[in-house]
Length: 166
Image (cartoon, rainbow, N blue to C red; front, side):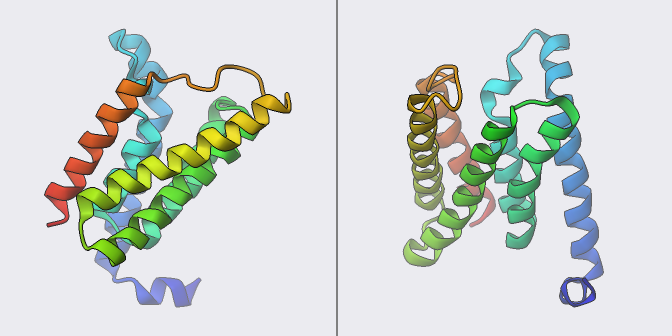
């Protein structure tokens, strides 16, 4: 642990920690905020939103931490999403982070890298979810958030990364 913390500066640790607390609080309060405002805030993919903000404003390492922990935290505090879907979302978010940084190295274009990483991680998510639905391991519908909303949020998230990571 000391070796990991030794590589990070004090300012970066504080920044990452403050962001992580904000991300966890946001995900924790999404159901209450949706209820209070009568707006389906969950449709903007709050976990991915926090991941995009982590990529834009914290370290690569912290983006992986956010991707790995937000779905698990959500499951622990609210039993939602259910356990198998928690692992599925965790895998999708981790793949999203890995693909983003992989594509940024290859293409040097942050907007395209984010569009591709979100799109490909979603395709992987839906492929695995389809398999789990087909095997009757999980139930429900394949697509719960309308595709057009997913496309809009993907373009907005990619635009944000483009603006913030110039």
